[in-house]
Amino acid sequence: MFKGLLTTLKEWAGKPVTIQYPEEKRPVRTRFKGRHVLKRYENGLEKCIGCSLCAAACPADAIFVEAAENTDEERYSPGERYARVYEINMLRCIFCGFCEDACPTEAIVLGDNYELSFTDRHQSIYTKEMLLEPVPEGGKPTPQQTPPGVYVRAVPAMQDPQD
Amino acid sequence: MTSERKFIVPIGPQHPALKEPGHFEFTVDGEIVTDASVRLGYVHRGIEKGAEERSYIQDLYLFERICGICSHVHATAFALGVERLAGVEAPLRAQAIRSLVAEMERIHSHMLWLGVAAHEGGFDTLFMYSWRDREIVMDLLEAFTGNRVNYSVNLLGGVKCDVNESLRDQILRGMDQLEKRIQHYLNVVTTDRTFLARTEGVGRMTREQADLFGAVGPTARASGVPRDVRVDAPYAYYSTVPVRLITDERGDLLARFVVRINELFEAIRVIREILDHLPEGELTARMPRRIPAGETISRVEAPRGELFYFVKSNGGEKPERVKVRTPSLCNWGSVMQVAVGHKLADMPMILAGIDPCFSCNDRMVQLKRKDSQQWMSWEDLRQYGIEYYKKVL
Ligand code: SF4
Ligand code: SF4
Image (tube, rainbow over the protein chains, first blue to last red):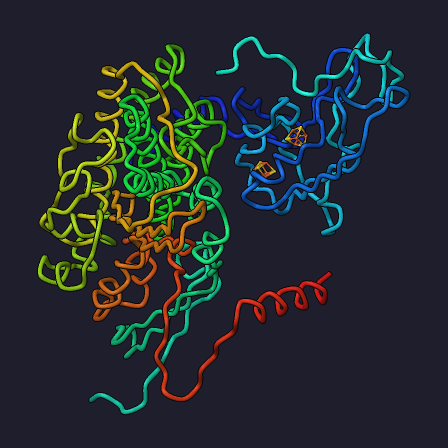
């Protein structure tokens, strides 16, 4: 019995291992796969070019992409096309990260947000506005007016294509 | 005097032993169970059918979701099968990482079970402690792969995540911590008097019974059956780093505790050894998009026992048929026999003793009945699903 009491005393003196969740949050690791984020370039243009490769790759059919044409007056992303509609159904998504691997422009990235809850099925569909990250400092919001002939390349040249 | 009338205690489908649905019927005479039967299938999801509609890589992620606890082994088994069909062998480093994650998964699965089983036995302190210490390995898995469960480590032809120096140190440190705690649990489980009263001699399964009912995994090993796929037919990295077979002759609940806890030590040893001799090299080998036609089987040792995959390819981008047989399903037959003759109060412990996992359990079983036939075509089923959700929304 004394041995048992000793365990109790030892634990009583120690720090609690539980955390008070909504007030206190546990940091996630760098490789964590949370809610998706659609990335932008430094100048504010969207990385996503609406190619639907992610939607084709997704094992759970969670992504819906509808592309539209870019013009130099109204430019959302480099190249010819951008994603006019981009929706992810978070109830279908299994957070496997395959969309991230499939994307040619590294536009979609699984972020660190794990607080996904909704009260109704329709709320589980995250639209492009919800997924897109805010415009970085020094950038302009989309659509932008751009000089012709600059943003013709949809997929950026990568230093290391193996990466 | 035995009476003609039977008294049947139904348990479930909501949370009979674990927090998963399964339905049991125990026929009792007073307190003693005289007959037991099980009904499964409450969480059947049609994954095997769904796999036929998707490409091999998508299926890999899908099969990983068969079970939330032992997800990595499912992906490994499927990847091994497809790789064999394609005639590709994963690089050595990839194989080592597969084994490494599999052993970490085994630790987390066995510790989860230790907690659940202790909880069923009314020993909630052990439940809390073992789950607290399980966080160590869960954290490591998250740092390693990005997810606490459903790691998505495997690719066809290799793995996705690499181990670097700092991660290696983290894992080794975590293992040192865990080893101390596990030693403590082994002491508690084998010496605590009240706990022994609930486990010693309860649910005894002889070696003959285990062989007859085709028990697998730690349940079989606790009855002295030397059966472990990692030893019998080494896959991944187990031929380079062999595992020791852990068996126990007693066959009762206590033996199942002891075998699983000793397997934790063994897993820690294997993890250390793999990390010490991690081969250098590529992580993936090139896989063709179309898999050559053929059939193959692959077996791996899941935390609960032997997991079996059958993959049939017709030369296209999608598999023609994938059949999964999970270890929990094999163990039901034995536990239902063993249950007879015990008190009703022992049932949760006996059920939890095989570490049942319902989500991987509910494979399709075709019932042969003479009269009623309930067949639904794929189209009908789809339509039914759409109508159903319209009502719910
Ligand atoms: S994480 Fe996986 S399931 Fe989710 S959207 Fe991406 S590919 Fe689809
Ligand atoms: S997120 Fe990437 S893969 Fe998906 S449509 Fe946009 S550019 Fe294509």
